[in-house]
Length: 113
Length: 114
Image 1: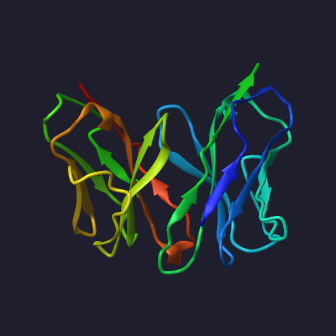
Image 2 (image 1 turned 45 degrees about the horizontal axis):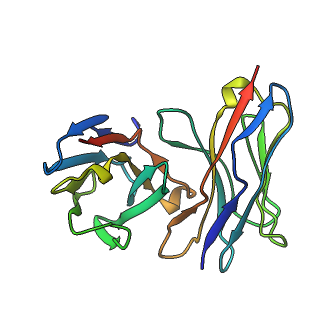
């Protein structure tokens, strides 16, 4: 069935380190892919998205590329800041009549000064 | 737009009481979703609506949970009677595929049942 697999956290990094959070998905067809971020005490916010193969989504220094051949959508950032500490969720949506987002379990990122 | 608005932000109630959570979606969004988030289970989709009609309620845990969407600008999630295991953060989200996909989430209601 449809599912999203994310690397387990917490991921702990020092400020200015390089970040990768792995995400792979299992879905039929060609879904749209998303990364959401949840800061403490808040709801989920859309961070970036990609709607077709080889698309690169980017926002606030974060990037992720839609890799159809490996069914992956890994999140990267070249230099993390303390303010990036949050939980990151990978998700996909089949753009059919169901239009449900399938979420991964989330990866907590802790960035130390 | 003010975004998705949920109320209340926090709710503390005694076991057995009725709880009603409220959500105002973004104007023009034709999909509305209710999620529950806990440490143990993560993010769970409870129910979603399209054009005010419930499409999939398979995530609603028990008959104690019910949700309505009487019009395009308002939805409620009701728990009656509430139990301590219902304690969680409940999120509402809305979306419109015609606007590029992705959901907009509210800030959530933190429910504590004692």
